[in-house]
Image (tube, rainbow, N blue to C red; front, top):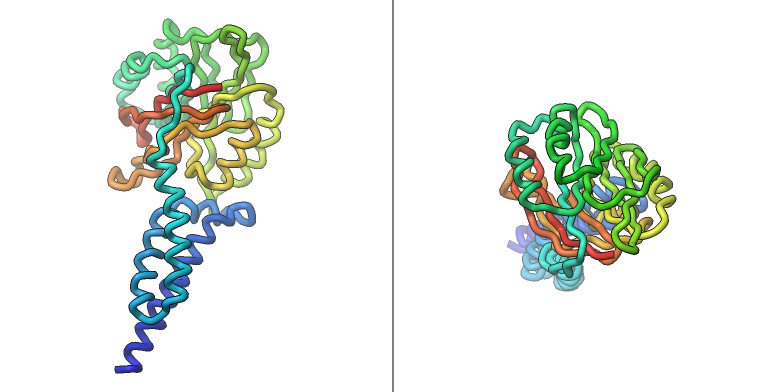
Amino acid sequence: MEDESRIWQQVIGIALAGAVLALVGGYLGFLHPLGDSLSVGRGFAAAAVLLLAVFASFAGLRMAAFVSMLLALLTGAQVLLAHNWPGVPGRYTIYQKNMMYRNAELPALEADIRAANAQIVTLQEVTKPNAAMLARLADLYPTQHICPGGRVGGPALLTRLEPVPGTAFCGPNLAALQVVSGEERFWLVSVHLHWPWPYTQADHVDLLLPVLDRLEGPVVMGGDFNMVRWANSVTRLAEIVGTRPAGPAFGSYIGLTSLVPLPIDHVFATLGGKATLRPALGSDHLGILAAVEL
């Protein structure tokens, strides 16, 4: 009986150690991009550590259980706050959407963009068929800046704010344009990051950082970042342009399952903002409508 109890203690200890490693590893994206990939499951890892810590306590591993439980509560609270803390609404409205390159519901998406009536629209996966929808929106958004992309299309910016002539440019899966509103001049950015490790997201971020670093003044940035907002890759991009996320974080990617959507689409602005969700409308991403502040 004692041998059986010790075996269970070892099994629980090993499982708890593995869960803790996965949780802590999600904070090490600055050392290796694997850390960012692990950070996607931070909430699940924290829940697993908390559950295993309870079993560890009953198995006699009280010190390990106490430390693990504290770690799980601290890290899990961060994720809960990101998903539940409401942002403060601002004066500028932005509609963010990964259109999906093979979208078959473009009329419905066009109607939703018109209904939202945001001042700024940031889009990704803009292909030739998708660009035809943008052309129909020219009455509402006369300023349109579309950048080339790969097989799935590129990023785009639409706005009815006054553009600053000669400021529009394209970067690696990035579209940027400076606008004027009253006495305020600020940049609009639409970005579509590559997939995370083992794919090339970290390299893509390294390409974008010097591009974003050249932007002078406030920035409003929307995009499909293919990564949670607390990951190292996304925080580096947000910090270099001096922005905060519009909250709360929403599960926006439903391509894997609608039961557990991933929060990988974000809107950032100098003082953050308040975000709400819009329907999928032919995409595997939900839209985000945010009111942001500079």
